[in-house]
Image 1 (cartoon, rainbow, N blue to C red):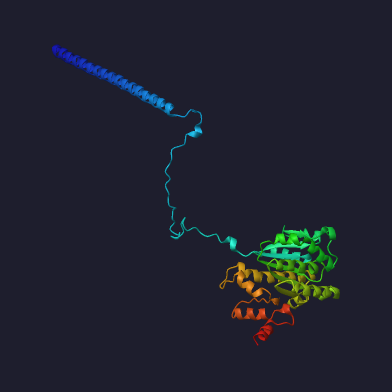
Image 2: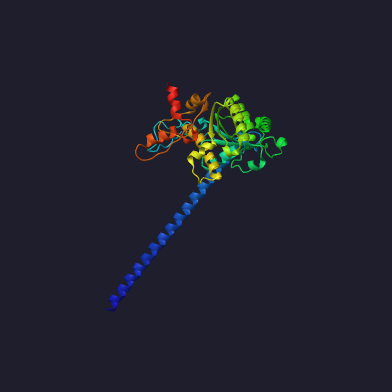
Length: 361
């Protein structure tokens, strides 16, 4: 039994020695491998350093005399590759860099509404408040206090040295002289316009005297000029009515087309409850309709589109014109709206329908 145990112990001791020798051999091999790898790295580093030093020497020999001038060294040329634009599934095939979209925003007609005098300024304020689109605004007045109430910054104080900024005192001659003094500035403000609306109230000083001067200057500048003006109410007196008649006669020769709205006929659209402020507000709305109905033909797309050339061919050198508007709903609404437009209550005893029938004879 003891001999067996001694043999087992000897065998175990022998195996332990063999294992120790194997581990020692592995450790020795690992150490030798590590040293060999380190030697190879040192050799490669020295060779790379030598190659770099040789390249630097050659580069120094080939450099110009001014080694600090970095501008003389041009960067290597990079080949540019043209990448076609990404095409979306909804983008048409013709919409490429070779066929860009044409910018048409600069081809719209420039339409300017010029409010002259107090009534003209009120009309412009109403147009701005009601959101009239596609037009620019300009207000010309001799009354500085009223001019400050306008909703547009594009305004001209006419001849303050002549009137002191206090208005014309219902004297059209002063209004005419004030417009003649400021006409260069006014024309500069409307430069490039294709069409100009002159809106004013006839019978006062500034509107009656200045509107014909401004319209005539625009007409001579080649601008299609349309006047949309009002005649005074009867309660405003005979003197104001006479001044309005004189101003209308002069204005007619200074514009292509003239639309006249008699304020008195607004009572045909009102009742006994209509106040004075409501009556003047109705007059401003009629002036708005006169401008909007014409400007919308050019700036708003419709089922049958009209361009500026169409409007110009009709309204150039037209003279007096009449305006009618109608609105209806329900059955036969188109016919009812047309009949209301032809029987416009603003025209009083004048009937558009009768005028059309006479023209057809």
